Image (cartoon, rainbow, N blue to C red; front, side):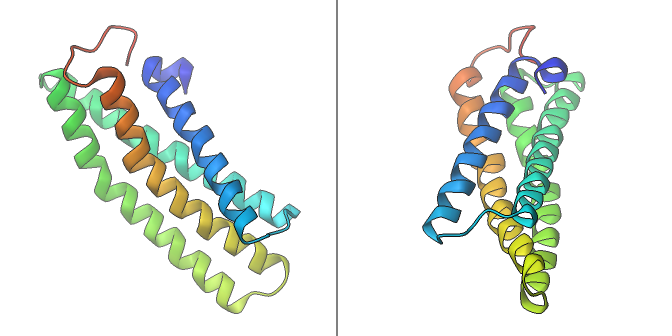
Length: 147
């Protein structure tokens, strides 16, 4: 992410780290045991979180190429990527809930970890990443290294 998105990649990695901390914290509240299927759920969560950040930052790049000012490009990038991110996460969450309902043992553990991870991923991609981007670049012209 850093190699491809530079400054925004740093923000994406910060959001990804926060996502993992949040996921582990929620799992510890449920006193969940981390098993191999749970680790697989975490890996899929990381993939979904990276996908969300790629969607957002690609949209910001596209909006800048269309000639929008940087602050409007950031706003439009988040707004236009939001629908796609929510769609992908809700679809995955529905599958995780179905797996949790009909699965047993390891499948249920995978599904529960995935469901929690999708919720934290949706939160960090749409809210936490936006707070970081606005905090670092809000209202200012984006430096060349940022995107």
